[in-house]
Length: 200
Image (tube, rainbow, N blue to C red; front, top):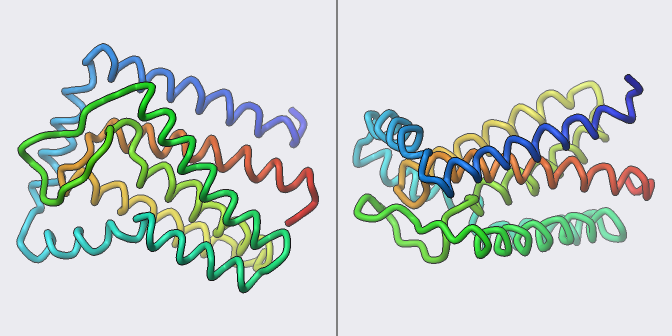
């Protein structure tokens, strides 16, 4: 298979995976997964970890992300800086649209913090995947021999943001999985777009 066709395979797989997760949620088949993951994560709970998760989850909060985007816009300037900001705005809009369409309510009675709005897919998971993933990609383009480092750091950052949302009781595990899936789908398409425009 030609190299330039692999991204289509990835996109197709992610669309199918997101469809499966959506089907499980809409038909209420996801409870076993959600309860099992929540119970496992909370087996490690402690007052200190509660405080850490409340702070760590803000790394994918709107205020922090927009501050980072504006800072990078200033640093990169021109097309690259604008693309980072567009990436963030678009993924926020898409997440909001999908949440309204699915209309899944958030978990109740287990929240360590207060959140509003619908639950599926997780905005923190989806946005962090798309936004931090794109930053890692741009860094990797500059530091080709050490791109694995930027991808690893980005991957761990995204992973624990997702875990923090389940730990804090504001999302189900399937919300996070769907958020990562949709975010990665968006990221692949956004990278392909920027490559076609020869911006990176």
